[in-house]
Each structure stands twice: as C-alpha cells, then as structure tokens.
Length: 92
Image (cartoon, rainbow, N blue to C red; front, side, top):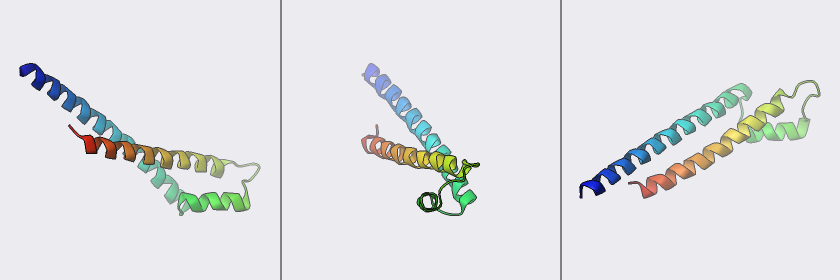
C-alpha cells in the first residue's frame, strides 16, 4: 500500500509540474498576442488582411515578421489550451 501511495504522490507532483509549466507557456504566448494587439490596434486577422491588400514595404519587413510571430503565438496558444483542457479532464 505504501508503494502505491508513493507512486500516486509522485505522479500527482509530476502532473502538477506539467500543468504549471503549461500555464506559464500560455501566459508567455498571451503576452506576445497582447503586445501585437496593442502595437497594431487590431486583431491578427485584420492585420493579415491588410498585408494581403496593401503588401509589405520593400525596405521594411517588420509588419510581415510581426504577423508571422503573432500567428505562431496564436497557434501555439490554441495547442497549449487544448493540451491543458485534455489534461484537466484526465486529472489525477
């Protein structure tokens, strides 16, 4: 019985550490999204439409690079939130 309790305790600690790390990652990517929302005063989809419509200046690719970083952050957030949801559902 003691061994089973120890294993469950260790699994619980690992689970809690994983959940903590995932929440930290979510916060990190949320900050990236907020930074770009503030910088461009619009949602990502609107910026992407603007880039499609107007293009990117030849001598300044910042808006293009920002849109890529922003899109990556949004996609990573979606993945992390799904993982968190799945792990909460199975909880220990």
